[in-house]
Image (cartoon, rainbow, N blue to C red; front, side, top):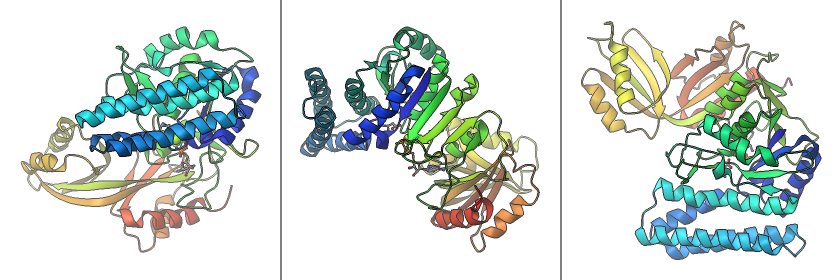
Length: 446
Ligand code: ADP
Ligand code: ASP
Ligand code: MG
């Protein structure tokens, strides 16, 4: 069997869904599991509605509700040439009834917990899959009966063992040649049946988890670009599709900001040895990327990615740095505050590290002040240059720095797997830095 995952832009309206139906139709002999995102920007719309309700603006929340309802009804009507099946109309009405209740509840309490947010956010995928399953006359499966997660709402961690067992029970029996089984990305449920989500962009992760649980031949991620490109095309328009990527390269790129894949997507696929391909829904005959175990690309740097804002902390302690145990003490503070550290660079008298911009900085600084001096630089970004051949190509680092010209590099770190060279620059220089690096290091060779 294969898994086909379609992102929000691929199912944005009836015309898009028709194209998806065409692609799924072509895959029917391969016993497809179709994993869908919410239509277009529906998830953002649901977040906006929930926040309006929380802020006490119920009329605005209900206005958003009406707009979403209209868009979903319109898609259903158009897909069925004016005559959607009654059961589909009833399902849409039910789901929007549920949304209205949830929004009114949030509005009444003026409280939006991550748990309530997940219940609201889940409606996007539940709606898109209902409409698409009806259009394909496929089997609709509620992903919450399979995607078991812990109870961390908003960022549920899937439990792969349970997912495997539940997939065998609730998905496998429906799969077969000639039939499309349709389920939701992004959403899951706890052991007690409470709705959770895997975090924004989590549908890719769902697809990989379902693929691993079912022993898929391939996981296809269908989106609005011809695969993983050498850089974010919104920043570097001349970015080119990459035909082959290693699991390690793809994982680094996703972790360092390449939005095309959710950062956790690759891990289940690696463990199960399943190739992941990334393809363009509107250009199925075009180029695409295959991500698999061992790939040697032709150039030292395969692609660039960036993530920001991050905060750089430079910690120094003339007294303690040379003594054993300093780093242990330093990282103990981050561990205790549950702050994860991204890049680390050490010098004789100081240690620099990067953390996300939204960490509890005040508390961290208080703890660190007990034994060290700390300099804080906010508004920075990490640029990652990723490539399997980075480690075996002399001179790349020098070329990288010189191509940046007058853009100041504040920190450099080579990842332990030696396929990621990361630089820290001021956030406002990120785009220009990426363009300069791309021109020199990735260039125009395919
Ligand atoms: P979907 O809705 O299908 O999940 P996303 O919007 O999450 O799609 O991801 C696709 C988008 O990721 C592209 O439209 C592109 O703008 C962006 N992107 C960022 N970096 C890259 C990259 N290196 N390669 C391809 N796309 C990228
Ligand atoms: N619909 C969810 C989001 O917009 C999940 C996804 O599309 O991957 O974040
Ligand atoms: Mg996505």
